[in-house]
Image (cartoon, rainbow, N blue to C red):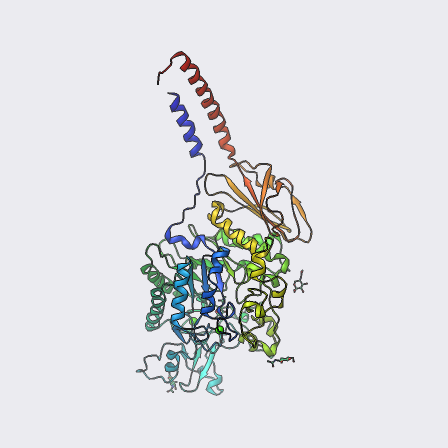
Length: 624
Ligand SMILES: *[C@@H]1O[C@H](CO)[C@@H](O)[C@H](O)[C@H]1NC(C)=O
Ligand SMILES: *[C@@H]1O[C@H](CO)[C@@H](O)[C@H](O)[C@H]1NC(C)=O
Ligand SMILES: *[C@@H]1O[C@H](CO)[C@@H](O)[C@H](O)[C@H]1NC(C)=O
Ligand SMILES: CC(=O)N[C@H]1CO[C@H](CO)[C@@H](O)[C@@H]1O
Ligand SMILES: [Ca+2]
Ligand SMILES: [Ca+2]
């Protein structure tokens, strides 16, 4: 009888605990990983020509095991004349000689898999290079028997235009890199469309043959063992076939004498057209065909857009599309706008509209955006890594962020980025060279990136000589890299970081803070605090976290501090001090409040029963 009472008590105790245990299936490996973006020209040069390559990457793979990264993504390594450094693909199924050979790629993927790493490739479906065989054939002639005739988007000069035909562009559309999307081809006496550089003609997705070809490309790389694709510039896939002008953006101020910029128009005819979702769904089918335990093929889509316009790329419960579209919200923070509230806005934008059952993701930098050290200042490099790695969801980290690499300055006459070279009046604003400088491995010449006697393709930042390199930081317990490793390990070992759970704590001008509740029954939770202000702050987090579900204790322990100098310190939760630019991760052992009212009487009942048992046993020995 008294066993029944004990059982009921135990049951209540167990049921009263929320269960959020995160057990990732083989289809969800990408939820429990850090995605590390490698810009292949800048990671490791193996042959001394000053440009990074595949053999170089292969030689560095063990680094990822060391720092707790499980997934690498390569920016394009396909055959390319490099007008846009590989985003202009001349053969979707081959490797550019500057990076190596297909055999080098096979070696890279085998080595990566043997080390337990996943490998993702960039997939660039919107356009090819003007040197792609398809385009060379397509521009040759209009003949109906030219099989490549409609592989690209061709258009006649505007009717009724009195200028010479090559001046009569079909409409007002503007390319992402500025100027008209239309380029005259004298052989066809027609224009072709390019949403990026004129060296990047757009493929025509209204042609079923193009679909077929690009699906073959996906299959080709899956057959090689690639674990996922990151799909480039997805919103630009389709253009409206009515080819009418786009509306003028009233918020844009044109600069006299300057060619039109992308922001001068509202892109109703050239971006986010609904048809593209059919293509993604179709591709998702191929991903599924190539997914079998334990190899799930992972899809990420990329485009710059408002968070609201990006969310549809998740697809619907019945028809999934990407596993996630990149969330660039945190890359929009600048030192002018930075505040606790501003970070909260960016995080909340994504979290509040996230479709049910979908997984968030974060990005703080890439090869198109000034490094976090430039945008927010070196002071925030570490705090931003803490946010990127500890917010709910999958983080993508750009090479060098783990050692707080800084941008470089390159004069115009040595600038490499075509976006800057083509815009001489704005080159300093547009250049993407600063964030593409070579990876800093050690303090040997060229930071261990290359053995060249000449120059590396972009200069190495001099600060590799003063501690901003992997070799120095890997042995330094207080380095950025030590912090990164600690965070990577926390993500992997603590269930709190493996769920979608996010509860904001204090959010104001100065502070952004949140709470990650344990995903199992250990009740171990973490409070993450960032101080974006110019002065130290002391706040009461105990009161801020007070709620009906659990009881917050008076003390916590600093699991990690951004400076790696407070780890292990005990803190009083009602007055935690955080320095300007500092971030803290505080371990908190909560207990369940409501349950206490159930548990306590249970414990009392059990105790009484036990005593009774002892007493009864004295009177009726050997009863049971
Ligand atoms: C290609 O076809 C268009 C009609 O769509 C025509 O205007 C143009 O002259 C043709 N080009 C050549 C070289 O015949
Ligand atoms: C932001 O950064 C720019 C460039 O580094 C600098 O000139 C400016 O003073 C900074 N502003 C603030 C508010 O820190
Ligand atoms: C660029 O200009 C600087 C200063 O005028 C000069 O020293 C350097 O050699 C130039 N670089 C090239 C590639 O011409
Ligand atoms: C972030 C990113 O991948 N940006 C790329 C988008 O696509 C264009 C054209 O392919 C590239 O120039 C960008 O680098
Ligand atoms: Ca090389
Ligand atoms: Ca297109």
